Image (cartoon, rainbow, N blue to C red):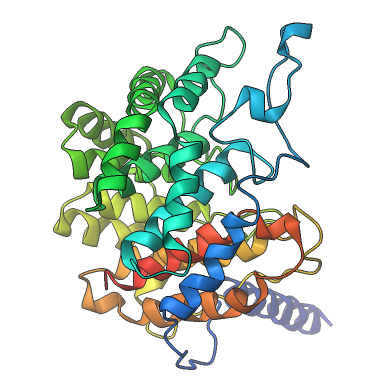
Length: 369
């Protein structure tokens, strides 16, 4: 009888270990995905998303702190540049989307009309009013750091666009760009711990976009600070629990966003060593990661999972960039884009007001590999 109990105990232990092993190794059958392409047809389709909302004032999620009745104003009065597309940050990256598409496709349908809309919204007067809002007593931390990051991504895109309109827009935007840089430099030293969520406050995402801007324009102080903060927060991280992702509302992957940031900051050899400890499973050519599944695209939170597919993709492309041993991650990224791309242009404003930007950034990331 004693031997029977021992055998039963061994069976239970082995069974549990087997189940845990399966959970920790999300290997999938490898299928070669079609490589998504951002051509002028797709660009025309995606451009409609920000065009359809950049001048739509309502519904609107202001996210402001009310200090008194004098703060109760219409979105367009509070944010004359970025009042559309449901919330401030979506309006910002909607404008980025149009700049990115115009830069890549000068013959984009309606290009001149789009430029006129950009010049109207991003006028010098409107941007100064946006600066004024950030300087108010109760909203100094407004859009920290997700909206800040997208503002710098917009500034970066304008800086790299060789067009007279871009020079005017960049000049108009510069006071807000400078303010956001000041806010980063003021805030980051105060942040004692990274924010590791899969939504807006994610620190790694905010640092990555700020890093890209600093590198492009040669802002040494911002670059140096991000390098120091990233190393302080993340250099000793190991075995990120990727199997916990995604959470139900994620549109960012905490593990992959961190890895994409460190790919930017670390030297080649530093990153090769670091990623081997942080996400060792990524080097397995049979590694698999199922795309996030959306159950209801009319639910503004649940549709976040389309976003996680695009952000996973751009992070996987970044990790694989220049590292042949991680080339298989590009196929995984392609699967994620292909899963969500056909579904984002529909009548659902819940996703349509922002997902186009994520799709465009993910598709742009393919060109870097």
